[in-house]
Image 1 (cartoon, rainbow over the protein chains, first blue to last red):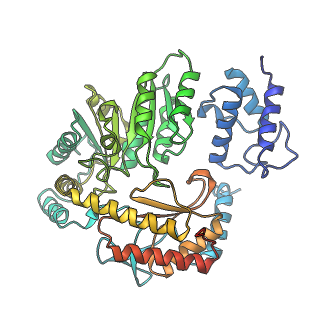
Image 2 (image 1 turned 90 degrees about the vertical axis):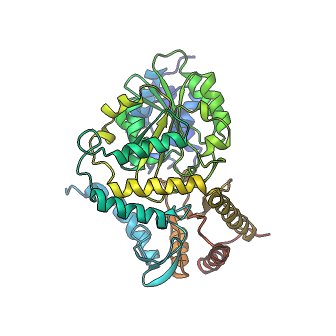
Image 3 (image 1 turned 30 degrees about the vertical axis):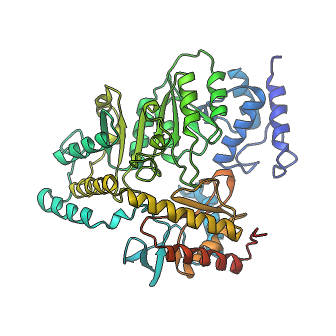
Length: 80
Length: 401
């Protein structure tokens, strides 16, 4: 199955919501650091979970330009 | 907007920490050293359990004398980098001694351990290569990976199967693959299952670098680290380490059998663009390496001490890491409690390290003690009593059912 940016965003949000500390009202436009209050380590740990769910590797340098959930979804789709 | 505005979150976090912790855990000053294990802090005689001085060699007489003689003979600094005027015969002798100690073809000495890993990781992995880093690798490895411009992939801590999965996910993509791991991880003191990693390295035809910063001088029959202990030294392509733990001085090294190692002296920026180690440090390091070679009883004493401390903590109901090494940490629930615990331990007469997220695994605060061969059993037992008292004083529940 080919993933779209929308379907990947949905997977990311579902995975984030499994963590009770994440605000309930997140959307594709939520900023990962600011809105989710993730530090650099939390971001890297979260990306590892998403990598396994979607069977993709996201090199860390690709995260430099990622600010929102949408940005992360776009980066993942471009790697698939 | 001030250029410091970006540090607002850090500033707030530090203010919150200071509100519950009278003494600054990141600014503790040792006013005087009485021995390798006792110093004066805040005017009070304090047991030193946070100094990484695993074999007590920062205070070795042989190293002090060697340093004095070298300073008198050569002066106190080289005022130059290794590739300019900063290479003395002493540097080459130490490189020779270390290569021989590890049974390796060559050795490069760096000015700090940080620069050794930074330099090797950033230079070996080029733009088209892949770096596979353990999730808990030290900051110097992550900083080096950023400098490298390579593609960086993180794998789950100490999980060789997870590494294999991530290597295979890349398929036949071009580019060299360099795996970077540590012998003993600095926060928890947990030990790598290295045989599993060397197996993956061979299956996937990758290079393997190990940082033995916290295991050199401590593990293995001759003190060469976890690779020696596990009998897999020939599977390691590059070993890096530091002089600032068991060797008791400052500096770093990389040893390898690769025939072209000397090329790295011409392109490793953290080696090229900094002053070389001063003669007294090199001479002291050489002297302490001889002690490590000739006194295996130091390692045995360290293991006895670490084991005594670890089991006493478990018995008392503290939550520890999985392994016994020179680093024994306990895990606490939240930062304010950990800060109060650290402060109380200092007041009760022992100095340990407070380690906070995101520098710690799993986002949990740690109280980290480094155990030394030089500690007496009385000092170890005293620290256990201090921990138990501090736990009671800060309301930490112990699981000693």
